[in-house]
Image (tube, rainbow, N blue to C red; front, top):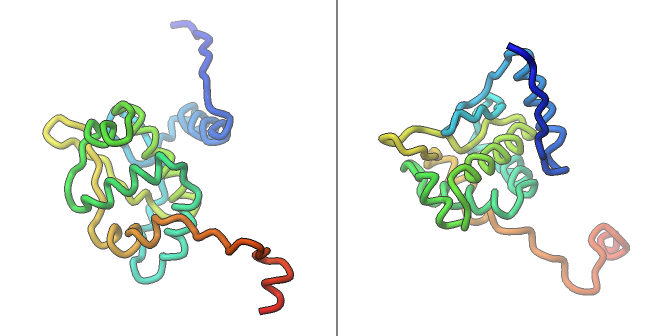
Length: 166
């Protein structure tokens, strides 16, 4: 069997993670979490600690794109239950394969916090789906964490002279 040259289009923000994955694939080291459609997501095995990881959860959520926050919120809202990729796709206006890619982005953000992906993949009766532990959803990825950071009041400079005066 001969080699074939392939061209792969990758978003500029994903080039580094693509090369990391590709390097593991070339070395036959595809460790990680397998999710629907055969995608392997590199993931740390360190579980989330609901008592002490709130700051890590907030940092992870801040690093996510808007679609990734939406997927995390949808799965979190139904924690403990399987949420099909088709349902998620219908809610975010995408396709099931895109949902898997978005979960991969969530896994990379979790890995950056030295934690495993809070969303797990499973096969729910032949339908690819995702789920999340209820305690993680409630205490780490609930509405307070998922809400965007408030904007500073108009006319203030966070970290500037106003911050030093207080």
